[in-house]
Length: 592
Image (cartoon, rainbow, N blue to C red; front, side):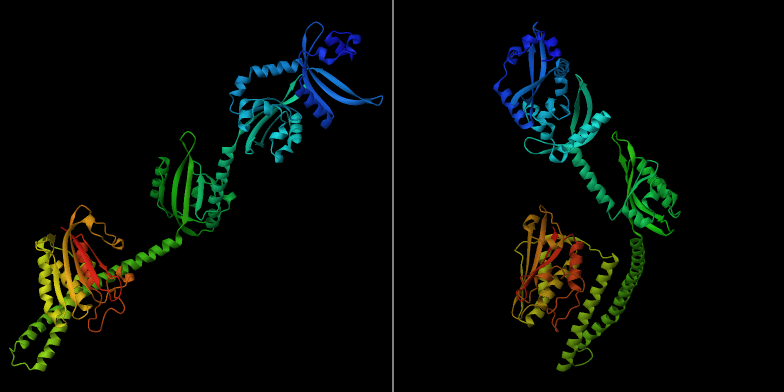
């Protein structure tokens, strides 16, 4: 024993030599302490334990015992250095007094020696790592740091000793194996002349996620096909993406710190800029087109969307502009607009021409039909059988030409927007019966029967009598053209609620389900229509290949006129067929 030991304990050297340590110890050294010390001796060649000794006068002295082994006269003996840690314990006692405050802290607080052995951890530290306080206190910092960061501990401690404090990032591995990133604020402190590290670690998992999102966003913005410019509230550029440099010719370094007005061409009216700044300074988004100038002097059109960016307190911190070079688009639009104007002019000319030609043809044709009737009645003298046949052919073709002229006039009105219907209350069943009666003689020549199936009560609705008669005649004539000889064509009419009527989606018509409607269907068993043609069959001049025959050749206007008439009444028309040679059903609905 040395002299300091004699003075601190109050025993003489003679009394201490040969005295067992257990006599000085105020408590019992447990088997757990002995096992731990033995393991440390074997593995590290040294063991450190803390005990409390009692001096001769009864004073309790906390001590740290460092035990080593050494050879003495060929025998292995223990060599212990006993250190008075009263001051350290006083400091730790102070720490324990502040434990409630530290345990309430959001951050993880660690105190460890320069070798990484923990001497204090707060509640946040052990709970976040998933350990009890005792479990964590038995570990070393290297047990908690991930391997990547554990290897940096020694270098970091050296820096701390040199600088006094450090801020760094590290990663801890939780008890369940999860990795927790931390931002650590550490400093060196002295306790009883010994240096220790006090550190506060903040979980930055969410920050890392946010940073990753920012990195992704930055990459997306940087690689965006659109131009992105961010300015402060005075219009000074603080960020431009890659596309900006490609389009304008200005490098990032040239643009940053300059006002965005450097792109002004002088061709955009000042009123546009006044409106722009008025909107964004009031916190609103502004959209529009601006004629700007590149670095090389070339002018270009930009489609711009500018929005304010808000700060933490809701104040406007700057502006972000998303822009697109639409020069080519603008040129194309101007060309299209010019072409559209020319087409409109041609359309008007065409309409005028159709109207003029139709009227000019109708007048002589009416005269021809009048004289033809005189000839057929024998007013100009007896008509031979062959002459009567020729006159019949002339009448048939003049009727067809007159119908074509009427169709052309209708198309002209529909295109010019002057087509209108004059509605009244009429019985649609009566219209159907009159149409059947008018066409039955011609149908009878081919052995085709025309029938109506509309019940026994009138079916009144609001419609234009002339136009719906035109629809019925058109659909029935259409059915006659493509029906087989000796077949039957039926016009079915009923009154039903919208919810009980099924209309194909391709029509785009949404029927009012609770309203009453008139539904009419012209059904034949003729040539039928393939499914792919059903959508387009009402388009103007549309013809189904293989359907029209040399005898009944059409030009594709009739069904389009039907569609326009029905739609002018607020209804819809469509065709149904299961395929070629399986017949067709042409249906339309009118509001009651």
